[in-house]
Length: 534
Ligand code: F6P
Image (cartoon, rainbow, N blue to C red; front, side):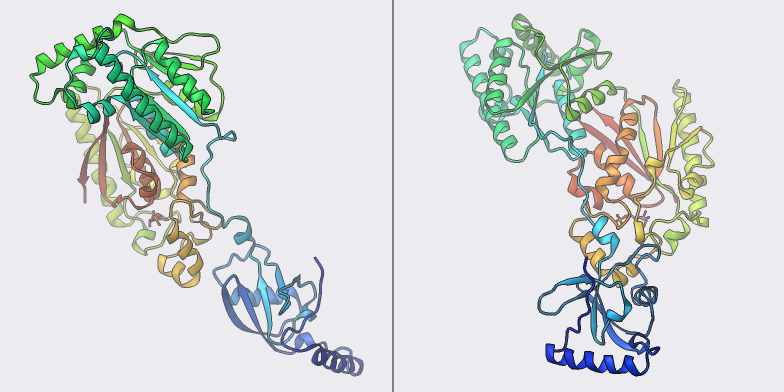
């Protein structure tokens, strides 16, 4: 970087005269440097310009004046100052204070703007391969459940994923309520119609993958080698990587429960007597069993799930996304239990409308903490009376207000930093009003993309999602009821996962103070009840 002296508002001739004058002045009074003469200057930070009177003698003086004018900027970082040449726009780092002239425009390239004022980008692996997860399994083996769970997890991890369910194509195109013999592998009309639906769903999935999708989940029985080869060859032609996800369930109680819990609610059996529906569905399964072939082959990429995750077999699985899918599936279970989400009680910062910080609870906040403890203890007594042990896993963030909110609960608590509030970086401790007044650019940038906006030296919602991922796996794995005492942004992210919300919605979800949100995961979503405790 060169160091130059420029007087932007003067012509070369004027500059020459000025230099001569300066020369004379310095010749006569060598100790009187022009830097101690007060000058009007302009600081420019991006599109914000502020006038100032400068009378300093060194760069540090300039920095102090700048911080006076822009108090919101961090004091502990370097602020490189540049002179911008009028006309050419050439920039030169100021190394010598005497380079500053009257009416000089001084550009401030702030470190945080260059280094951290970026949008976040979710990490989805280095290779950008398109992946097709082909579900395999007899009816009522939980394929759709697994497919949707994987999809929800991937979308939450910011990987564009979508389920293509062949059954839905059938219902849409030829109508729900086909009797079991439609699925008989020796029924030529059924074979033709089912193949037609399978290809339509496959075509749509491939076109979606070519248009920005990353993981297509092809949800059908795909129960014969012939059908799987058709799908695999087509995907290979499109340069997509196929992984089979086979769900094998030999526990007939689980199969029966699945039929009763999900299939009876299916549009295929609307208005049908439940006994008849169960009987018809069993016969449908029997048709598929006649021709069912398990996935095999040394080079085939597959994941086999036995009896809802009791055993997992993995073949030829490598890469970031496939590995995350395996890891996720290893932690799945179908035990029903509540998950409670709550923000900490009102904090001193909440009362002052300040964001972030690590302040304590207010009196109201403390009252909420008491009420929460009472609520959990009453819940535990109630389930104990029903024969359960009433154990609850309590997780809190590492911030004072969350720890204090859980303090009266008798169950053991685990403190997790992953549950800490979104880091507001240099805005931590400010009110939204102050941010608006002092850092309008930041406010505008956040408003235009709240999901990816990263606070300077802080975090974005996407960053929060990424740091919550290990915790989410723990949440999926835990079979006990879990109470999470955390913060607005982190809970928005968790709630968004549990309800399968689209990522854009996440930063705007309503998670009020002093409210306990009870979510009970079911086969296809969560049941929600909220309790206002104050
Ligand atoms: O205001 C409370 C708070 O938890 C802040 O600490 C945090 O910065 C904010 O909520 C997150 O909400 P939003 O993303 O809407 O600013």
